[in-house]
Image 1 (cartoon, rainbow, N blue to C red):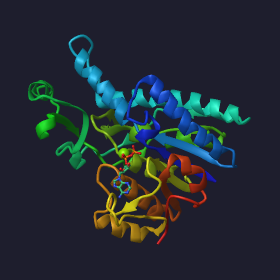
Image 2 (cartoon, rainbow, N blue to C red):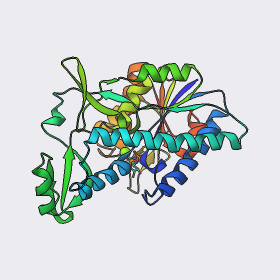
Image 3 (tube, helix red, strand yellow):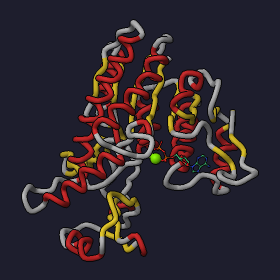
Image 4 (spheres, helix red, strand yellow):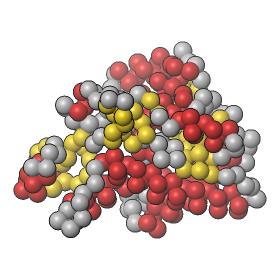
Length: 310
Ligand code: ADP
Ligand code: MG
């Protein structure tokens, strides 16, 4: 069985969102302990991960150091976080496997995701990134071509395109490594967004939703199950209300219906639900949304929100 496991931001930073290197290493150790338990069964695991806090930190460095070293574009930030997080995850995974008397080679792949240059996100950016700034500081960056929005009391915030992932360009390399027995880390942060222009690839200033990219990666590497690991054990109807209910096993058509009724917040649970629905609709296979400590049981449908074909 081949499992595509998408790790949320909380698996990559401290519980309170702290992102010092030691916080990230500690979080990766917890996450990779769960992955090592999973690997003790006879499964292949492909990992992907978020990078929101890490890119946020790089953007602050860009901003503060702009007068001294040239700022780098968002696609470079994505590539940098894929490399750093890949390194941290590989170290943590190898240690967790060794502690269990297991050995599996791991490889992290710098991964490009193709998007359309005419995606509406490039003319109407919607994805907020980085920290809030006062109007003056935002105006300076707007002068450099960035789009910033007035968010009221908290200040101004940069918005970028969040284009639809079309193709995971480096999936063939991932597949070769998987077939050679590697635990592969790929598509981190949704992949580095690139467009094809005159037969050449060019990085673009955008952020691809990591859950939607995970669904496409899962399909491309022919995963048997997509597991989206986050900080809650289930997708929930009427989330946060006294009459909330956790979703267990659910047919994809039914889950789409709940999504249309607005049960899942757009910046958090919404894309996860969309991602698992896409995977199940396109492949007729199973997908699960659950928390990291449940992934071992989630893989065989024993916990979490388990989405099955209609
Ligand atoms: P990740 O970093 O793993 O991608 P997100 O913060 O983006 O995590 O999404 C998970 C969060 O979604 C949960 O912590 C929860 O607060 C929120 N959420 C919003 N709507 C729902 C819902 N209907 N059911 C469960 N969680 C929800
Ligand atoms: Mg998220």
